[in-house]
Image (cartoon, rainbow, N blue to C red):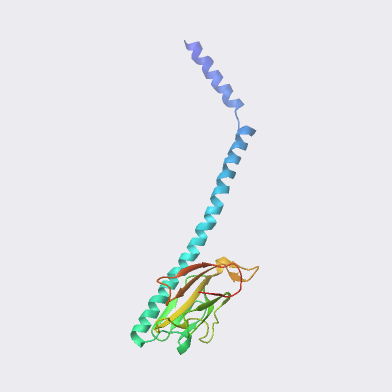
Length: 194
């Protein structure tokens, strides 16, 4: 019986000495599995990052809406380009003396123009709003029922198409039309209406 155990022990020891690494086939199989997982995961990761950028823009838009409604409650008018109220310095939007809304990292205000005769907001997805003065930041709109309104648009530097010069996804808010900020996919640098 003892001889059998000694023979088995020697066989196991020889087997350990001969198996010093993985075979080429085993390595190729592992590399193929990793490549398949990466091909699935990388596009999904890109989509998650894009959703995070849009979520940051929507969060900032909600903050601006809240600040505008608070301004309206105190002043009986919205803080718009019409009354030279808002100012933008690239990092925050200041609505008169009442409120300052800090923007999330890489979120920018886009240039907009509004109509006082109807509720149309025109967005320039290729241009950030000017960082001096009060124009093209938050536009005054006249809603179809005659009430005052306002509109603005946001972009995110991480989804900027540098080759063609525009922010690929915008978040727009038109108080005459929207209950909450609207996500808009953009395919060119030319202006569009909302």
